[in-house]
Image (cartoon, rainbow, N blue to C red; front, side, top):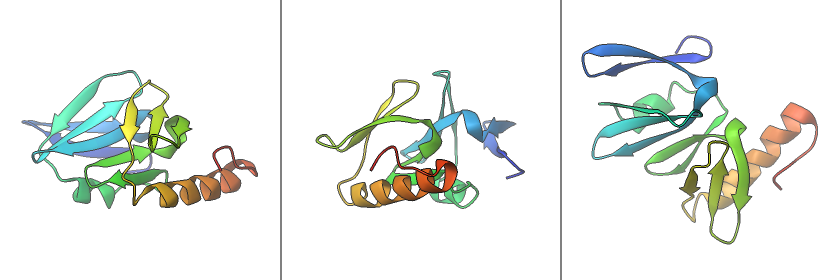
Length: 119
């Protein structure tokens, strides 16, 4: 990673990903897909674990197969244990990850704007 971007190998090319535009990373059958704020996506042969180690603290792992950008969360749905991203994507949070996500959001919001929007 270099600053606010990440370089991923996708097919036969390298893709520079601007992290502020990434809503989430999801993996399915060894294929990592990057979903962007504008609704587009790119798939690469990479692991979530490899990418996770290169991401800034604004990303949180909500399940074994998904890392989301907490800065781009629009709302939380506590009853359904899911989040709605700013691009409208609805992501299911693992039951075991829900309390950690709430704590993370409270700490993240407190450190960025002095108050907590999601707690």
